[in-house]
Image 1 (tube, one colour):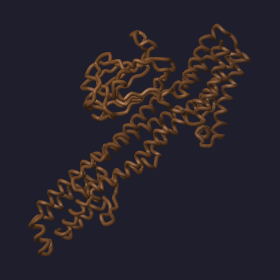
Image 2 (spheres, rainbow, N blue to C red):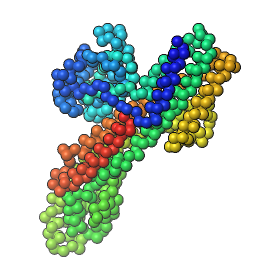
Image 3 (spheres, rainbow, N blue to C red):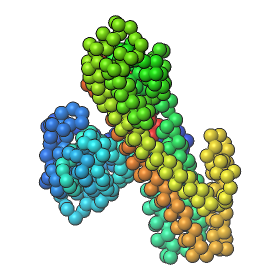
Length: 505
């Protein structure tokens, strides 16, 4: 029996290594948008949940949960369940939710359900946020979601389940195999079988080192997309007042009636925004806006003050213009700046989300980097930047040679056990150390799922921020300029979103 198990583990290792040599295939095995009777009949609403047509993210339906507890189940069992993804919306940022994910072989028995995951927290806005969690159950099981909602209501939409990634399926199988090997160690003194298991573990251990490398590359690549940089830069320029016709008209009117000192002061305020003559726009920030907005309004009010324009040394025509248009111009400034400020607030919210994601990615990279170095030490490579660089090398032969050294380390351990120079206690300790290190790698997979959820949500917010109905301006020329920027942003963000989904999802 042990020989059979060991042989299965060998096959698994070969497949695992092959899987990470190329891109892993993702495939959706179930999806539901709660749109119509056919989709809704797939779900059994046990209590606390109803179907809603008012709060759909896409299409015409969503699943609504009132404050308190609720439970829903799939009526059909699925052959396997990998990554669960859905979008959740709450009635306000004050609403909190906890979602337990459970599976069972028989949905009619309440005692047979096993919890395989949990998502909890709150949304920072009353908009849909993406959530992802790995279930990774290869059995033919039913799915159940138990909700606890406090301080409001919640809705979910666009739920999908992906197949188990090959590396996850094989790692689950490997964990089971190792447990059986260790469990039978007391009863079976077949040193050859145990040594074979240890050799096989070496191949698995080297493969999970490569898994860590891939997740580091994923994290490093999130912000490497040129299209995302272009999209955020273009989006920031859309909050710059310098590009809009209304603002240029206001500036020209102020120049007409202002004194030389007022003109110089205004030019100083405008300089950080870009070049008004060439319409070269800088990305707008909160600091730049705060330093510009109120002082600019003060200059407008002062320039059109009767005492000021009568002593500004301007001609009679300009004085008449100031007398007739002072209040009108200041009112125009107030209205336009309100529109710009609305746009700026949208941009700043997106910037904050991006900074939060960057912070999480940086922490993820730092923690995974530390875990990878510890894994290399446990795998016999020892400390040193050179070994670390070899494992992360873009050159596949260099990387493969480093991983082979780890595999060879396990071969040496296997030989020592087979030759009885290692005790059973040493064997168990070594196996537990290696498998424990491998199990910790799974934690990083879930953390990356959370990062991926944040990025998906960010893309969704970004998309909606440049929808035509979000144009904040009233002047037609201003609206047209905003839309011209939005067209570029939509193109960039779609390219970036597609690249992210292909690489990391």
